[in-house]
Image (cartoon, rainbow, N blue to C red):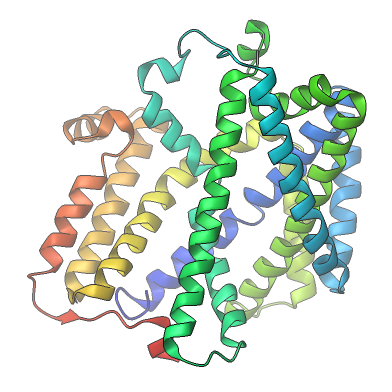
Length: 374
């Protein structure tokens, strides 16, 4: 991004991404998810149980983040596979137990645009944003492995990427099928205070495996989210300490933990609601950069054209936010005039057009691979 667009753009975008996968969204959401699945079915909803849980949660997370030990790695290596196996067992058992769809027809915003709503809901996984930060860590770790050849290095990266894509994709599809078949009472579906994903996971565990299954899921979700929280506090604090060394790493970790604690007490649904405008702005830009990077690997692109492409994605994203959240009519008129706006993809065709234009504009550069740069 430094070479193709500008160092300032790179710093601003990465700062937004780290804030998104850090204290503004992802970290508070890990705590809120743990509470919704693990504690809420036991204590019931309420500000006091949430506050007590999040204070204890972030106190331990902060302590581990400022005093890193092997505990985090050991927890991650044990708990994440256990959680994945539990989810697979839950999905397979649930698909045999619940054989009919839970709703006869889509409701609410899904009835107007099922694909568009699902696509935007997918932003909440933050997978693409996290990949910007985590792929660097993964490649650095792989570089420590002394491969016998460049071909072996490339093959290993591709195999790891494909394995993650297939396995994570299977988990997502399995959870989607479980949610589609699990019987959700109409009063629950219509209650905006209930997170349906957390409800399906906890209640299906209770119905299929009894209280022991629900408690086991609660512990696994909480501990798995906890390891993610500690890792994110450390990653975000390291990034900002390296880019803006105005205070120590420990102070950044403390600040990130405190902000995350405050936002976590908004509750899971409110966090998702507040984060949506930021995600709607960042995600088209991030996806555009991914597409541009892949294309530039195989074909030389104009530097001006790549800057134009990113500017188009940012402009359309900003207009979409002005339309949806500020109610500005002229912005809505522009968005509605673009193809695929009904599927929340108004930015896609203009971005593809700008990418094609980049193939012909002057000042073309070829994308260097990560191996070539090192």
